[in-house]
Length: 400
Ligand SMILES: [Ca+2]
Ligand SMILES: [Ca+2]
Image (cartoon, rainbow, N blue to C red):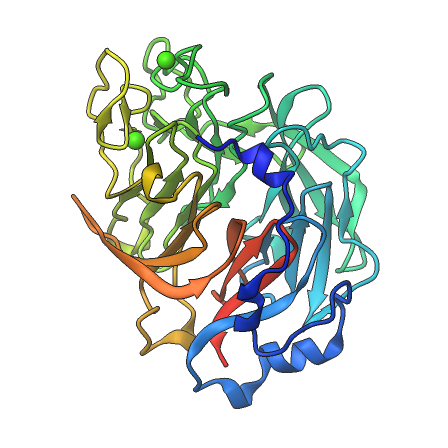
């Protein structure tokens, strides 16, 4: 297994993938206005699908935006979030929590999520590893300036002790139901030594589903699958996960898609179809770790109701840390082979892959697009999808 943190710390040299963008961009000029013309140019709207370079950032880990908003927000590992208007990056960050953030191991500021009612409430959430060894989710509120958060508005939502350097989780997503979902790794090291992932009494190795309170903290929705079960944490939505570093909901059909980073052999994608009306699955799933790694038996024991992955890639084939992505619902990609496909990748294997998700097994193939040191995907307010490299560049998957 290749540790995520080691790769984070290893900046690759010149990246030939950058030639896939429509323009070469001088290094260190992320706010080059000409890029916005290129990246958003309507003249290119009917061209082939390619990687359109958005810019270069400081160890970016995620990209997001409020629903319907035309801006893009880039999360940077050290603790800042920057705003782009068109292709132009504003000088002042939207938020700077770098004094709270630790970048040890696989840590850092790892993602953000905007409340579904963000236009009215101004509330958003960030996920980071703090300097005391905790996984921390905070709520902040926009200031009177729409391009700046109010740094004084911080409210802690949840704080989870996690004292090893790896398997920090890191994803926040609002579901189709308006609830906040977060992914926590199993506690780190290897082989889940604390046996967290199969233990419903612990919150590590899980996806959780919570309803944040405006004043801080959260409520557990009564509809959560383990509410009322003796010895189980009511927050848990799914379990048996090793490091669900990236997961998403299909914004059209509500399906749950998880990239669960493997141990020494297998990287996997987990998939549960949504319900009618684009609603998310009910929850309660056991994705098998650490009784199973992919479809392989890993440790003795039982994993009741194990839901095996729909895609498994062996590390012997060049995979090391799978990076879950999104089902592409970008209207500008209608009629292309990207529409309705799930895009995902891997930190070590530069091929971005496209899958038709279905149970029990999905079909998958390389897209032809390649990004080195892929660390995340992102989806903006229009449903456009991006690939993020920890080396700095972010690309939109678009026509140009
Ligand atoms: Ca174990
Ligand atoms: Ca699994």
